[in-house]
Amino acid sequence: MVKKHNTGSTMVEKILAKNASLDKVKPGDLVNARVDLALGNDITAPVAIKEFQRFGLDRVFDPDKIVLVPDHFTPNKDIASAEQAKVLRLFAEKFGIRNYFEVGRMGIEHALLPEQGLVWPGMVIIGADSHTCTYGALGAFATGVGSTDLAAAMALGETWFRVPSTLRFEYIGDIPDWIGGKDLILYTIGQIGVDGARYKAMEFAGSAIEKLSMDGRLTMANMAIEAGGKCGYIQPDDITFKYLEGRVAQSYSPVYSDDNAEYEKIYQYDISRLEPQIAFPPSPDNVRPVSEAREIKIQQVVIGSCTNGRIEDLRIAASLLKGKRVHPKVRLLVIPATQMIYRKAIEEGLMTIFIDAEAAVSTPTCGPCLGGHMGILASGERALATTNRNFIGRMGHPASEVYLCNPAVAAASAVAGKIVHPGEVF
Amino acid sequence: MKIEGKIWLFGDNVDTDAIIAARYLNTVDPAELAAHLMEDIKPDFPDLVKPGDILVAGSNFGCGSSREHAPLAIKGAGISCVIASSFARIFFRNAINIGLPILECTDDLSNLVSGIDRLSINLDQGTIENLQNGEIYHATPFPPFMQELINSGGLIEYVKARLGK
Image 1: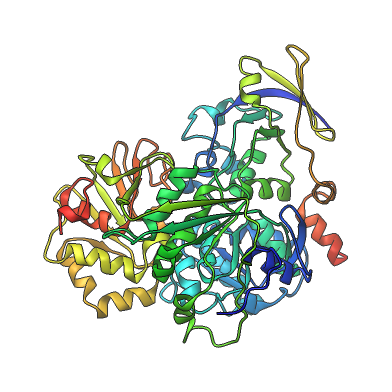
Image 2: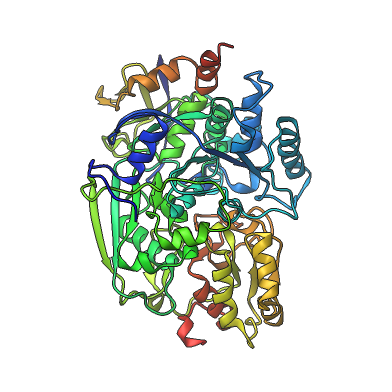
C-alpha cells in the first residue's frame, strides 16, 4: 500500500491536480486537465467527428489515446445506423486510431476498455457516453461528456473540468447471499435520489467494498451517473492490481484519498441484511427490496449491458438457470458484454445452459438497454433487466415498463415468469 | 441578449430519453430530432412548439444519457432558452458547448410561473421577468470562464481560437 500524504485531498482532486499540472485543487476550481483517454461510440462519435472536421486539422492530439467502439446500434440495425458506424471506421483509418473495435472483435465499451487493459489507476478519461464513470472502479477519474467535448479533446488532448466535491459511501457488514454490486448501487441511488450526487464525485469504500469483486465494483461505478454523479470510484487495492496484472504492461502510479481528505458528506450503510434491490419504473431511484416486488409478471428479461454483462454476471445467471427452463410466457435475452466474455462463457459451458434453458443469446451490443434494437418492447409489456435505466420508453414503446435488478434476480425471475427472490428458485 | 417567448412547463428529472428517445438517434440532423422532441412524455409537443418558445422545468433537467442529441433537438426546434432550477451535469455542459441558452434559477420557477403564458429574459444579466405581474427572478450567473466560452460562440469556436485557426 502506497503511503498516503495528508494534504487533505481526495483521489479525484489529486488526479485532476496532477493532469492540470497543479500542486493542489479544491472543489469548485475550474481547471484545464490533460486527457489520457477519450472515448466515443457509434451514436456519439459521428457528432464529434462532424464537429472535429470544423477545426480543419489533419491529425488528432494522439491517435493512441482515442478509442472508438461501435456498440450501440451494431451489428447495424438499419441503413442509417450503418452510415453512422461507417463514419467511425473511416475516421479511425484516416487518423491512425488503433483502438477501433470492429464488430466481431468488439464489446460494450465500458466492459471492453478495462478488459483490454486500456484503463489503469490515476488516469483522466472522458467518454462521450454517460456510463464512462465505470472506470472509476479501477481508480481512474472517468466521466461522461458530450460529443462536442469529445471533438475538442480529440484536437487538444485536454478539457476543462470543475473540480467536484466528494461524497463518501461506506458499506459495512458481510455481503448477504444473492447480493452484488448492483444491489449496493441501486440501494444507494434509492437513498439519495437521481440527483443526490449531482456534479459530485462518489467514493465507494468500507469493509464490504474491500471484499467486492472487480466485476461488482465496475457495476457500482457504472451507475454513479444514475445518482447524477460526475464520477464514482474505488481506491485501488489488491483486487484492482490483480485485475490489472497481465492486462496493463506499463507502469502507473495509483492515487489515493488522504486520511484527512475533506468530504462533503459521509454516508454509512450496514448491508448485512440487505435484500436484492429492484428499481421500479420510471426512475432508477424508485428502489424497493425484492420482497416488495412479488407477483409482478414480466414478459422479457435482459441479462447484459455495460452494467451487468460481465463473466461473473453470466456465471450467476447460469447457476440459477442450470437444468431449468425459462417460463413459457417469458423471453430471456442473454448478451455477453464482450467477445472475450462470450468465449469464456462457451468454454465454461454457460452458453449450453442458457440455450438449454431456451434463452436467446446475442453477440455483444448495447441494443436492448436503450431500446435501440434486439428486444424492443411493445405497448403494455414489462421487462426485468440488469441494465441501468428504466425511464419511460427506455426499452421500446412509451407504454412499456422496465424494472432493474441484479443478474440472480433476473435469471430466477425468467424461470418464475414474475419477479422473485433467487432463493425461491435455487 | 433579450428573449421573450411563450413558455412550456415541465417537472423535475426530465431525462434525455424523454427529450429524445434512443430510437431516433440514428440521425444527427437537428430538424429530424426536433420532430420527436419530448414525444414520449408529451406526444403533441413537436406539433405545438414554435421557434422562440421557452422551456421551464424543475430540478435535474436532462438527467441520464450524454447524448448531445438532446440539446440539439431542443435547439433544432428553435427553443430560445431552457430555464430549470438545476440541470444534470452532462446536459449542462453540452448545452453550453453547442450554444443553447440555459439558465439555472434556484427559485422554483415552474411553480412561480404556473398559469402564465409568456416570460421575458435578459440572458446577459440572468434576469427573468414575469410579464403578468412584473416580478423578476434571478438566475445563477455563469463563471467568467464559461462566459468566455459562450461569448466565443461555443466550444468549437473557442478551440478554433486556441488552435489559431
